[in-house]
Amino acid sequence: MITWTEVSETIDMITRENLDVRTITMGISLLDCISSDPEQLRSNIYEKITTCAKDLVRVGEDISKEYGIPIVNKRISVTPAALICGSACRSIDDYISVAKTLDAAAKTVGVNFLGGYSALVSKGMTAADEMLIRSIPEALASTDVVCSSVNLGSTKTGIDMDAVRLMGEIILETAELTKEKDSLGCAKLVVFCNAPDDNPFMAGAFHGVTEADTIINVGVSGPGVVKTALEQVRGADFEVLCETIKKTAFKVSRVGQLVAREASARLGVPFGIIDLSLAPTPAIGDSVADILCEIGLEYAGAPGTTAALALLNDQVKKGGVMASSYVGGLSGAFIPVSEDQGMINAVERGALTLEKLEAMTCVCSVGLDMIAVPGDTSASTISGIIADEMALGMVNSKTTAVRIIPVIGKGVGDTVEFGGLLGHAPIMPVNPFSCEAFISRKGRIPAPIHSFKN
Image (cartoon, rainbow, N blue to C red; front, side, top):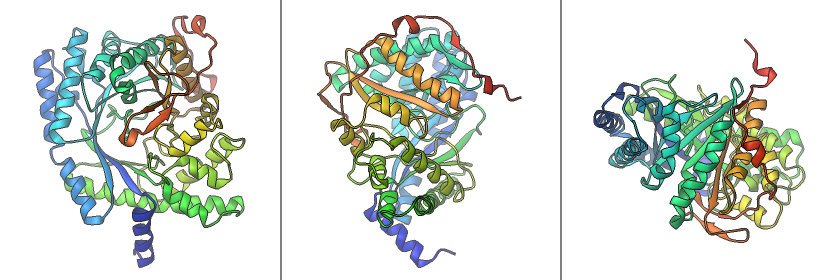
């Protein structure tokens, strides 16, 4: 039984504390679209997406109106494109045509983003994988809502360093091709270690091959709700702190569970997972960094930040898993720089550096996210940053990621404006010393000893 107190609390969370359902994401398998004819492949893809997702946006809007719950984005994730294009696509232009088809289908059904222009190369690259990866810069420059991801490593397989080296070059090329928009293409490109098959958040969403034909995954978000709850117990001991975060995460996750169940029933599509992540926005009061400050830090990045973030991440998961039948995706706390005003403030005050962010990624949901760096950063340095983050994921058996934006024509001291949910970011300095000789080595870093569990 839902009490009036709980109803009142939920209304407050929505109206005053920035609670929202960040996304309803429909996962769609494109495996049955495979054809050896490029035109037929594109036709099959367009038909499958526009048929399966034709009611997604309307249903999301209806649920939002009926329950008064903001649902910010409606999105689609599809089978990694490298897996379905190998038979038909013989050139980079063929892959770009598929990206444009995905873009057209997404626009037809009215979603905000479509993820899955992706390749899974944790142990090595097929010809199809490599061709898709090399097509990414032009594909992202010539589409509007398509997002791309590449999984470069896993705890079981190690890290494909050839792919890591290539992705440094691809990220720089993507930045160059979209430099008129402050290298915005890189905001739609992420690399992973241990990428999950059911992540509803962009830019890393794709529909894993182990999933059903179609699925509904929901991502909830409520940094403002957690911060407000912690304000009521300011100065309390760690037990009270942890209990408050857990109880709040439970309430936030129940909202997501309700939306997921409703969307699943109305669309006739199985419910997949709830992603419990605290995903910030540029809005004042909707910041993970502000939660860390409420816990007791002057700024995110101060001594104690990693411990505070570990506490927050763990309690969010403990509270959330009791609220939903199925929890998955990334789940925890996101720390994107450009999308979190508190993180931006910390960078501008000198409290938060790239190295400290890397340490924080050991204990949070994803990794180095939406970080703007000077446009003259070398490809090998970008690859080195990626390799470090992949190693953290591999050794710690967790998902880690890098979404880094070398902003062409800008340097440390400049600010870049992305707009909307992507926010704005100060250009962060990178370590000036070279890792060229390391990145130039061929092959892969083997899996850690603790990966041998079978």
